Image (cartoon, rainbow, N blue to C red; front, side, top):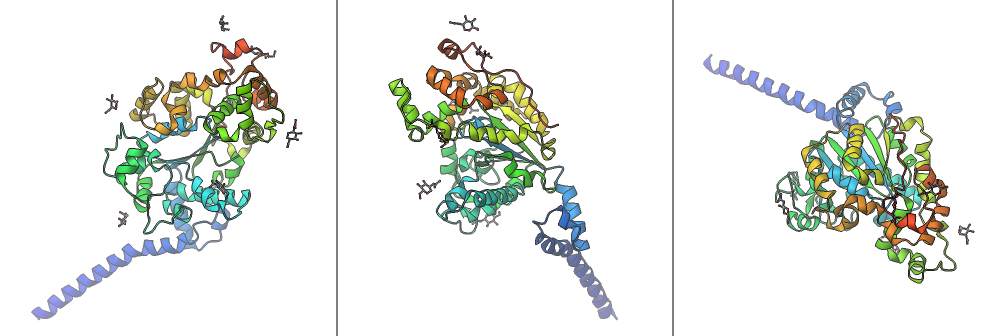
Length: 412
Ligand SMILES: *[C@@H]1O[C@H](CO)[C@@H](O)[C@H](O)[C@H]1NC(C)=O
Ligand SMILES: *[C@@H]1O[C@H](CO)[C@@H](O)[C@H](O)[C@H]1NC(C)=O
Ligand SMILES: *[C@@H]1O[C@H](CO)[C@@H](O)[C@H](O)[C@H]1NC(C)=O
Ligand SMILES: *[C@@H]1O[C@H](CO)[C@@H](O)[C@H](O)[C@H]1NC(C)=O
Ligand SMILES: *[C@@H]1O[C@H](CO)[C@@H](O)[C@H](O)[C@H]1NC(C)=O
Ligand SMILES: *[C@@H]1O[C@H](CO)[C@@H](O)[C@H](O)[C@H]1NC(C)=O
C-alpha cells in the first residue's frame, strides 16, 4: 500500500516532467521548421503552413518595430567615418564598419561580375541586420574554424566588438582605446559572441562605401522583416576628389602631375574616373522620391554635418528615432574641436577640426583644376546645392561659403 502510493506519486511526477519538456521543446521545433522558410518574403508567407504562419506573424510583430536597422551609404572619402563614429559611440548600437570588403576580396579571383557581387552583398547585409555574423565566414580568408577569426577587417573600428560580452579587456566606455589596442588585446573574435552582442542591442548600424546606389538595396528596404532606414552621405565632389588624390595618389597620376606642373596634362580624362557620374547616379534615384523610399531615406551633406555638427546630428538621430546618448554627445564635443583618440586611421575625416577639414580641398586644388571639375560635375554640384567659384580669390577665401542652405527631401 505504502509502496504503491509512492509509485503513483513518482508516476505523477514523471508525467509533469514529460509535459514540461514537451511544452518547452515544442516552440523550438516549430522554429526550426520555420527557419527553413526564413528567406521567404511576405507574399509567399500567405501560402505557408498555418503553424509557421503564426510564428512568422509573431516574429514580425516582435522584431520589426523595435529593432532598427540603419545603413549608411557613402562614397569613399566623403566623411562617412565621421558619421559612422557617431553611431559607434552610441551605447545601444551595434556598429559594423564596411563588412562588404570581405565579399570583394573573396570574389575578386572568381571573375564574379558586378551583379553577382551586389547580390552577395545584399544577402550578407540582410543576414547581418538579423545579427547573423556567421554569414561573414563564407567570405573571410582564411575561413574561420569554430566561428573564431582574427581576420575580420577593421574589427577595432567597432566598439561593440571590443567590449563585453565579446571582449572583456576594456570597460564598455572604451574612452581611450584605439583600433590597434583593441585588436592586440582582445585576441581572436568569436563570431557567436559577436552575434549575441548584436542581438542584445537595440539598433544595428552598417556603414559601407560598397553599395553604389540606393536602388541596389531596394529589396532590403521592402523586406517586412527589416526596419531599414538609409542615410546617404554626400560631399562636395571637389572635396571628394582632393581627398582621394591625397589618400590614393596612385589612382590619380595625371591630377598629381597637373598639380606639380601647374598645367593640365595632355590626355587627362576624368570622365572615366569615378567622380561625378557615379555620384550623380547614386543620388538621382532618391531625388526622384520614389514611394519605396518614403520615410526610410535621408540625404545628408558632409558640409552641413561639419559646419553645425550638433544641429545636423540631432536631425539625423530624430529621423532615425534614436536618442542622443551622453557618449555620443561627448564624442562630438571632443572630435569637433581637434582632439580625439578613437580612430587613428581616419585622421583626415575625424581627428581634425571638422569644419576646417571639410573645406581643406580649397587650399589643395588649383583654380584651373577646380574649374575643370566644375565643368565636369556641373549637374551634381547644382543638384546638391554646391556653389561654383568664379575666381582664385573666391576659392581661397574660406569666408566665402560654397554650399547653399538647402532642405533636402527626407522622405517623411
Ligand atoms: C583583385 O585582383 C587583382 C588582380 O588579381 C589585384 O590586383 C587586386 O588588388 C585585387 N583586389 C582586391 C580588392 O583584393
Ligand atoms: C584620454 O587620453 C587623453 C590623452 O592621452 C587624456 O588627456 C584624457 O584624460 C583621457 N581620457 C580618459 C577619460 O581617460
Ligand atoms: C564562442 O562563444 C560561444 C558562446 O558563448 C561559446 O559557446 C563557444 O564555446 C565560444 N567558442 C570558443 C572557441 O571559445
Ligand atoms: C573621355 O572619355 C570618355 C569616355 O571614355 C569619352 O567619351 C570622351 O570623348 C573622352 N574625352 C576626351 C576629351 O578625350
Ligand atoms: C559664381 O557665379 C555664379 C553664376 O553667376 C553664381 O551663381 C555663383 O554664386 C558665383 N559664385 C560665388 C562664390 O559667388
Ligand atoms: C573674403 O570674403 C569675405 C566675404 O565675402 C569678404 O568680406 C572678405 O573681404 C574677403 N577677404 C579677402 C581677403 O578677400
